[in-house]
Length: 296
Image (cartoon, rainbow, N blue to C red; front, side, top):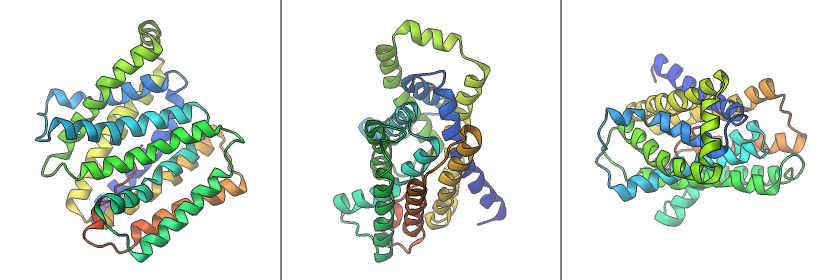
């Protein structure tokens, strides 16, 4: 990769890691439903200028509801109900494990021997983290968070069906498709008056966080990452996503004073190590398309 593109890949990973912190701050003002709605409403603004990509509506909706709505709404609820930000950034990265697993079940894409080792290591790390559940957040919150990597993994495989389209246009419309039902959900669950009150009394901090999540973390970062995946083999680009949980955990420690007990820290390191083995392993042509990066 060119040095400039390496810098872009690192920048995107840093943006996605810091997005977890921005989400936690925004949740001090907004409900999980409203925050997720605002994120995708902002990211969908380019739809005013770009045409809908040549993707059937059922496929567009399926990708949006898994890759975006399901992933980020469950993530927002989990963080709002106590799952630490740094831990969340690691758990969500386990999507690589589930993506390979789903590809094997649905498409008979067998992982390589090295990938199988990585899956085993990452699974062990998740089990270690499960041993810490109940101390500072509930089992229910952890279960909700696990929806995020599962949903993202399903979205990865569905995204493969959208061929020969401009990624910027596609992601803008995916955001719009997610924003519409999220808006309805917000009005039903929060009520019109509380929703309006939250919007009209938004602080400067909340406004900046939402711009960062919608405009920078979603629109710009997705676009930059898509360009890298277009210009280089996935094996060169995807490993940069391993920086996301490290940035997210470090930023959470600085901003929120988040600490990790020995078992949880060991589990987090084990998960990231397993993911690294999976992403850096030699992959067959068929399976090399199945692992996509985590975006926060």
